Each structure stands twice: as C-alpha cells, then as structure tokens.
Image 1 (cartoon, rainbow, N blue to C red):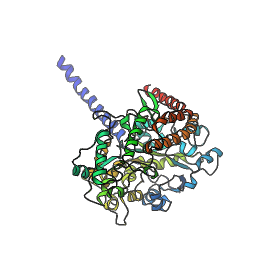
Image 2 (image 1 turned 90 degrees about the horizontal axis):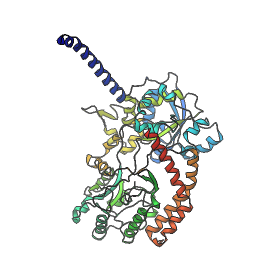
Image 3 (image 1 turned 120 degrees about the vertical axis):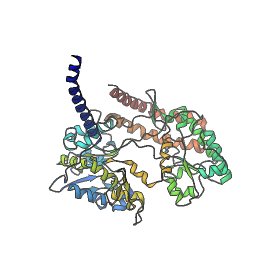
Image 4 (image 1 turned 60 degrees about the horizontal axis):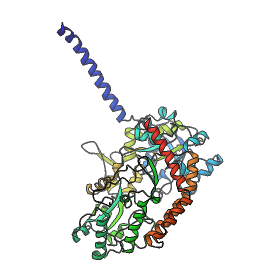
Length: 528
C-alpha cells in the first residue's frame, strides 16, 4: 500500500516542482531584465522643451544644442520625439518662474535635485501647488521599465518622495559606483627614495618631507582651494566630516568637533613646513593638474583614476598608485568617506507639459535593455562591438578618435553624456579608457567604509529647506574663512573658541537639529 501511494504522488510532486522552478526562473528573469520599448514612441512626431545645463566642454562640442550630438540625433530617429534644448545658464532662472506661475516654464526640467531649480520648495509641495506633474500613477503604465528598476530598495529611497510619490525620472546606475577619485602618490619617487607607502599621518609627514628635501618638490602635497573638497580623504582619519555626519544615530556638524581642530592643527604644521602649496587657497579646482605632477611640483595629490594615463602621455617614467586616506594609528578603521549615489541627475515634468505620458514612453526606452545599452555605449557596430562574452567593447571611434576627440568628448557625442538625465547607465563603460592598473585604484579608495555618513536620500520639508538655506549660508562662509585662516596661520589657535562661538551665533545647533529630525524620520521609515 505504501508503494502504491508513493507511485501515485511521485509524478504529481515532480510536476509541482517543475512548475515552481519555471515560475522562479521567470520571476528572477523579469526582475533582472527590462522589456524593449515599441518604437517609434509615436507615429506623429512630437516636440518637447527640455531645460538642462551642460558643462562647457559639451557646450563647445555641440554648440549649445544637444541635437548636434550623434546620440540625440539617433534617439530622435528611433523614437520620433524631438527635444528643443535650453542649455544656457541665462535660461536657468527657474525658481522665479515657479513662483510666478509663468507660462514660460519648459516641459521638462533637468536638475541635480529639486531645490536647485525651485528654491526651497520640496517636490511634494511642488506637486501640491501644481508646478510639476505627479507621476505616481503614470509611471507604472507608461514607463514600466523605469518602474521595475525603482522598486529596488536602495533606489526606491531616492525615486520616491517622503509621501510616497514619484515626482521625477532619475538616471540610475546599473551597479553601485566605487569612488573614482582619491589620494594618489608618485610610486617612482617612493621607490627611488626607499620609502614605504604612507599609512599614518606621521608616515605622510615623513614622505612629504622627503619629497621636499630630496626631490625639490615645492608643493609636496597638492590640496584643493579650500583644503577639504577632497571627498573627506584628509580629514577622515580624525573621525570627522567637513559637513554633517552621524555616530550611533546622533547627528553632528564636523567642523564644530574636536577632530576638526586636530585636522586644522596638522594642516597648519604642514603649511608652516612647506609641505603643501603656500598659495593653495588661490586655486579653483578640486583635482590636481597633471602639469603640476609632471613638472615635479607635487608628489602626492587628490585626483581621478585617469591621472596615470594623463601623466604617462607626458612622461612614461612617472609611476602613480592610489593610497588610502591617512590614519592616526595604523590599525584604525575609518568611517568617513563621500557616499556615491546609485543615481545621478533627474528631470521633472512641468504641469505645462500637455503629454506627460508620451514623455514617459520616450524616456522609458532608455531604461529598456536595448535603450540602456544605446545610452551607455552608442550604436552597435559603430561605437562598440560585443566580445565573446557578449559584453560591449568600445571601438576606436571612442577610444582613439580620428577627429582628435578625447575619450570623454567622444563619449559625450556618441552616447548619453555622463551626468545628463535620464537612463539606466552602465557606469563601468568609463573604465575602458584606462588600463586595468588604473581601474584598480577605485578598489583602494573604497577601503574606507561610510558608516558615519548620512544617507544621500535624506529629505527635508519645505520649511526645513528654507531655514537650512538661511543658516548654512552664514555657517559655510564662516567655516571656510576660519579654516583658511587657521591653516595659513593668519589666526592663532588661541582664537578657536571665537570660531566655535561664531558658529553658534550663526545657529549651527539649530541646523544640526534639523538634520537630526530628518535623519530620525529616515530611520523610522526604514524600521517599519
């Protein structure tokens, strides 16, 4: 009898397991893969106005009109959607247009965040006021590829407002991006002088002193114009950020902490010893100039992973490696480092737009399998081919352009330029312009964790935004002025209490509380 029942149920069990496997495979595939949009998006050509600033290099490349790039010409051919681009800075005064309910507001508005185009109005308030479209009901229907992607937890935090609305279409990276810039040092100098890679601040002082005395470097360590716009790389070892951060759920303002004074004390000593450029504050760049490195002016600096390639073109004897941020003690674990968002910029659809559903169909193409590859790599057979593993590999049209375009200039012409909204972008495409040894730099810089950093998706109410804007305008100015004065010795550290009192007079404690309230809301939202 037992064998009888066993023989009866066994085929049924096999059938159930087989069906379950098919369901799981199909479900996993549906989460991972986007569908391809039906092209063209519309049979009758539609036009929309799109306001988005572009960098000077791209502006020069396309003469201020993105329709002059090969990418947007091809996108229009595929979708039958024409974009009237507004890219000049003189046309970016959107805040007044929102406030005045002007008819001149374009259909689409690109930005890094909503406050950058609307003053201190939150996206939720802008929807409530009728300034921008509420896309919550439209996106699932007209942009299914984008909708599927933003259901992932780390992306959902960014793509939805505090009230659970979809207010914008974000550019999303297909993979989390590692740091693409950090501290670098001349390995050829270290080897020549018999020095080890510096780990602690004391190690760094020894190395920089040797660079000055034995290599003649006049600015052994290159630093940015404000001494802290280096993704926290020099101050992290003192356990403070140059901005707001948190420890065990409590928010702090880094430049008001003891660790900041310790950092400035060190920088002052290095300044007095001639280990950093005495005129660093007159610069205007976050990254070191390759000419300074090639000339031997500096032996350590903050730069991008492309620096070794830039330097080898000038002098193949220069060897560069990435180094981790310095620590007080060799075995310290650092928790301060700039967080890189899975999202870049975004765009909003103005309430003046007559056909938001067509806009969503248009942009959803760039979140499909075909469209995201087009946005990331361009046209198959022209700008890229597929290797044996079916991975896109750029052709010489991008890597060694015969018209003299650099890699990034070619990228901006033939693909969706980095930073432009919006698509599902494979950021690893940018690694193809550098040798593997340079790409490894990103792993070195990623060795520091970000557990003290506040979430990039932290959000504020309109009232909080307004108050923060008022407070931080004075606080930021105060912090910058005193930081420069302490490092250069214009002010003695005997005046440090004066600096802290000035921060308090400028209401830094109120700003900390606003951040604390926002962070508490974030924690409550993610604990439920």
